[in-house]
Image 1 (cartoon, rainbow, N blue to C red):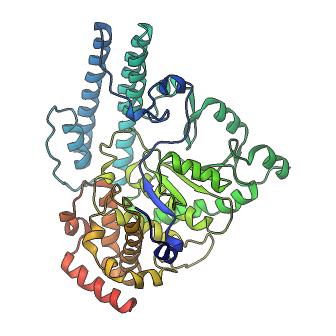
Image 2 (cartoon, helix red, strand yellow):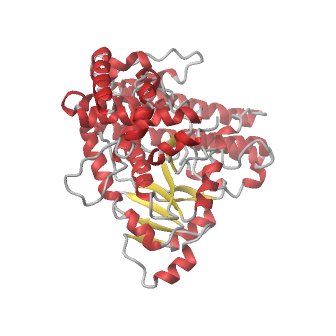
Image 3 (cartoon, rainbow, N blue to C red):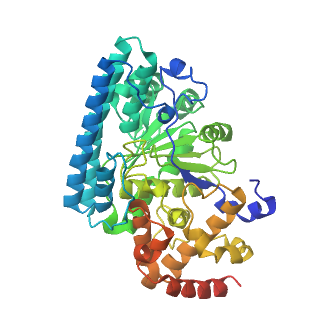
Amino acid sequence: MRICLTLFALLLAMETRFSVNATPLGQGAIAQWLAEDKNLPTEDFSRVANPKPANPKQRAKWNSAAEEFTAANKSLAEFCKKRGLLEEAQYHTEITKSNPGKSKPRMNTAKARDYLDYWELLRDKFNGVATKWMDYATVAKAGGDNEQYRAGVCQALKTFIDCPAAREARGEAALEGLGWLPQARVDALRLATREGLAPPEDVAAFDTHHAKAGAGFVVLTRHFAICSTARFDQTAKLAAGFDELYLTVAKLLGDAAALGDNRIGVFLYGTQAEFAQANSQREGATWSGGFYRARSGLAHFPLYAQSGALLAANHELTHGVVDYALRGRPATSYDGARGKQSEAAFFGVAEGIAMHLEGFVPGAPEQKLSAIAGRENTLKTLAKECRDLEALFSQTAQTWSEDEADTVRNYAAAAAFTEYCLNAEPAKYGACFMRLLENHYRCALEVSDFERAFGAKRTDFEADFFKWYDGRFK
C-alpha cells in the first residue's frame, strides 16, 4: 500500500486528485449522545443501525414510514417509466421488494429536462418519507427511548439528507450550496458572506477576523458557493475563473447536461494542515491534494499557496459540475439510482475528463485542453500498464486507489485514454467518450457493456489506440 517515491515523482501533476462518496464536515449539537457509540463517527449518520420498534406506538410510526416509502417509490417508478428514465424506474420498482431482482442494464431515453424534473420529484417524495421517520423519532423521544430516537433521526437523514427537522435535531443549519453545518458556524459564516468577488473595504481587517482555521467566509459567484479560510485576495483570484470553467464543462457535456440553478459548494483551506485534517476525516490517501465527495456534492482543496491551486481547483470542480449535470444534487445516503457510479465500471472516464480540464485557463481564447500535458515522461515509463485497457475499464470508485502503487498507473492510463479520444481522434471517438461518460454516471454498467456504452467495437478501438500510443510515446 506504499507508493514508490521514484514513480510518485514522475506523477507530480497527477498526484492530487481522487473522488469518493462521503459526507460533509461538521458535527451537530447531538454529538454527545451520538458519541456514546465509540465506533460511530459523530457526523456519519449512515452507520447508525436502522430503527427497531420496541413498543406498539413505535411500531405504528414505523409502519407508517414504511408505507410512505413504498408509495414514494411506486410513484417515482411510474414517473420514470413515462419519462424514459428506465434505469431509475427499475431501481424504484425493485427497492421495495423483499427479494429484489438483479438489475438488467437498460439505456435511458430521457432528456435533460426529464432528469431535472425527476430529481425535484425524488427530493419531494423522500422528504415526505423522512418526515415520517421524524415522527417515529418524536414518539421514541417522548417515551424516553434515546436509542430509537437516534435511530429515527438518522434514518430520516439516510432517506433524505436535507431533511430540515433531522438536521435541526443535530443542531445544524443550511448554507446555500455548502450543505449543513453546526448552527454556530452557520451564523458566523452568514455574517461573513459576500456576493461576488469585490474586496471588502478593509481587506486586512477582514482577513484577520475571517481568514483563519475554524472561522472562514463565504463568497458567492453565479454557480458556486465558496467557503474559504484563505486570504481574501487569494480566494478571489482563484475563484475568478470558476464560473467560466462551469460553462466550459457544461458546453462539453452538451445536451446531456441537466444543470439547474443550484450553486455547487466548495471548501478552500488556508493551510496544508487544515486541509490534511479534512482529508484524514474522510480517510483519504495521504498524497491527495484535493477531493470531491459525491455523497455531499462538495469539493475540497487547499489554497495555502497559489502554485498548483488552479490545477486542483479545475480538477475537483470538473468532478462537481459533471456530477451535478448527470446525476443531480445528492438526495439520499443510500446508493440507489444516484449511486450507480460507485458500482459501475469505467471510473477512469470520470477521472479522465477532470484531468482533461486541469489545464483550463480562464479568459484564454481558443485554448486546447490536454489530459497529458506535462505527463509525457510518466506515460513513457508506464507504457505497458497504460496499454492495459482491461485493467482501466474495470476500475470502480471503490477499487481506484485501493493499492496506491496502482493509482499512479490508473491516472496515467485515464489520461492517455482521454487524450486519444478527445484530442487525437475527436471526429472518430470524441462522441464515444462523451457517451461513455454519460453512461458511467447514469447507467449500471459492467465491463462487458463497454461496446454498448461506448458506441464502437472494442477490438477496433484498441487497435487504433495502441497504434497511436506506441507512436506517441516511443
